[in-house]
Image (cartoon, rainbow, N blue to C red):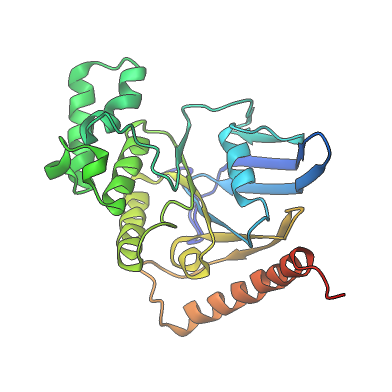
Length: 273
């Protein structure tokens, strides 16, 4: 598969270039520099995790890549085209599921395909296949209110995959789930990634999750957020969370994140008078 790139040494072809990105939020009486001097490249087919403490701008960076909130300065290029807004080549999966409550599972998955005005037979075939692949066939006629959190997130992932976008942007998609459901969906996401070879940019607070999933982990500094370090995860899948190499990488990332967490606490907690 030409152009696929991961930490396992396959051929590489840069899909995303982030150059000198800065993001400033302004209100009437204050200015917050959320991101500064972000420079990154993501390879086609790579699984990237963005990790850092609260307030470091992880979601802000993801939203900029998605085109929902453009940078104040700098450029983001996807396949050498500047991002100026949302696009069909970048599918987004949110923590809050963002499903339409009045639509069934099948209707939610089909929604983007109907917007694209694909033939009904093609829509039905694609939806049926995705529901099978994500073990949702028995729930196709149910509404989101009748599903567990894990099932809702499966539907959200299926809807993103239905668009056949080359890139999936995921903003803490498993953050609200219990530990067992989270691990099940982590394994499911890895299976999907290995099958479809999408480029995945995945925001997380979980250090273990980043080591479990990523080819590379981008560790960000506390505000203003910039790249502190990029840590390659050179472990084969499936990864053993109890192995010494896994634990060492987890410890390395923990140290990096805790340095920034301490900065966050010093800034947020006023000194005793």
